[in-house]
Image (cartoon, rainbow, N blue to C red; front, top):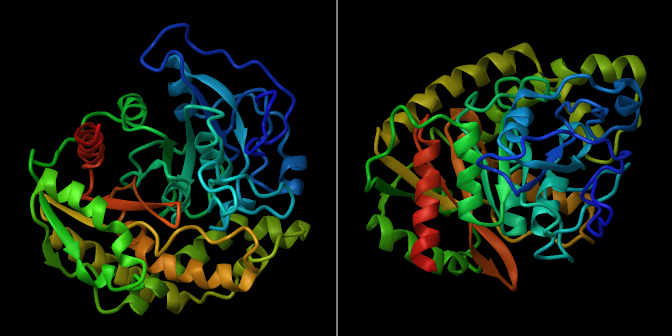
Length: 395
């Protein structure tokens, strides 16, 4: 970890040298890695002290991390994660709450809290995170960063601690569009079905309807930039059946898979879990087979619905989060309310498996606010190219 970590973004492991290529496309860049990924010479703690104690020192490095090292990037350290990656608040009861570099009085969001903190605090150039229910997109919006939830399965999660196998993705953060794209060059092959040069921009009025009318104008400037580049947006309906149907389908699938992943560990060792995390696992342990079966059927229908809405050339433009990040002094109950509001927006990409990027193009009351582009499966690189074009147009 860096000798100086004022943001408390990194796990304070002893510094172990990790070799990287002397030259390459990422040469000169430093990166952080969420403490879910194995790195030879380090333990993998997953944000829980008991899991850390049981980890042992790893002898292999996760392939995604190794790709970055082989491309010349240098490891800055392993970053703090919310406990077992099952939180969106950016607060770990055991390892603290990393600082939001662009709004220090507000939370980073999670669970990739340390990675977003490290990049926004300029302690590294980019950082790996994971996104199951919003764990890259939420911190990207809150911390004023570029962030991506890729098409499900596009970036390897081998040798990384899981939460939900059908929802987990590997994403990353960067402060600028060029660095964001350079990482994609290393981690992703070109899109097999890229978007056209001028995709069809879609405005999901139902999703925008979730935003409070007092907050809505904060995105006006960002929307103007995007429509100047891509043309006028057409109204569309992204939701299938209802927000409740989407929300609960996502929650039931997430809960069942989270318990399948961590339930045996929790049942055997009874680890001390922090506020919010403990309650979510308790709830997850009670999800029924009938609830999961219905949720899986809904997911199949929703994925087809959203694929039909997008076609091969459509891009949704939507808020990443309902508002700027809550204050660090917010209580657990109000954070849970905010989380549940956010999941209604974030679950579109989660249920469909489609890629979504959050762009740091808006703000309110001096705090960052992200706006998102969500495209068809496999158009990740095309969305990143749009981010670069927007950055170039604003320069």
